[in-house]
Image 1 (cartoon, rainbow, N blue to C red):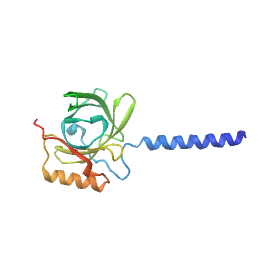
Image 2 (image 1 turned 135 degrees about the vertical axis):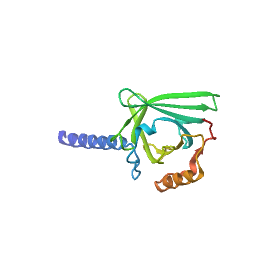
Image 3 (image 1 turned 90 degrees about the horizontal axis):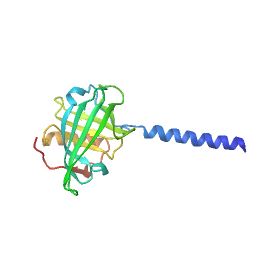
Image 4 (image 1 turned 120 degrees about the vertical axis):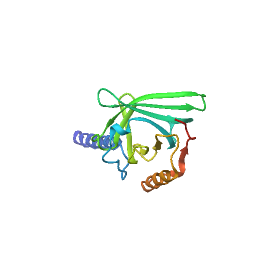
Length: 180
């Protein structure tokens, strides 16, 4: 009886470890973050062009993200948007850090204490004007621009990348053009 309890306990512990490791994934399987990522070029303000909608940005439009370097080397993340239901501006501040190294666009971000989630730059142009960002799974995707708009050819290229990576691009929520 004691042996069976130990075996059962071991199986549960192994299952819990597998679940924990799987939940630690910061990028969807088969999706690759950009290499030769330049953190300094990425810092600054980005405008959201489109997203897969989720509860954290529900009813928000005119969404921006501001990335600034913290003294400890992490990145301060300030997400802002206009809440159409509450008819007011909303803002939240978080912290991002690199998962591998500063030259791989794979980060994790937290807005709620010790809980981090994936933030992965999976496409970016050479001038760091346009970016395609994926979350920890295929429920999170953003098209970002330094401007309030994005050229159609860049949109088409990023949509093709996202679709080839398994994202349902028909569910993208497009935000109105924004003025700097």
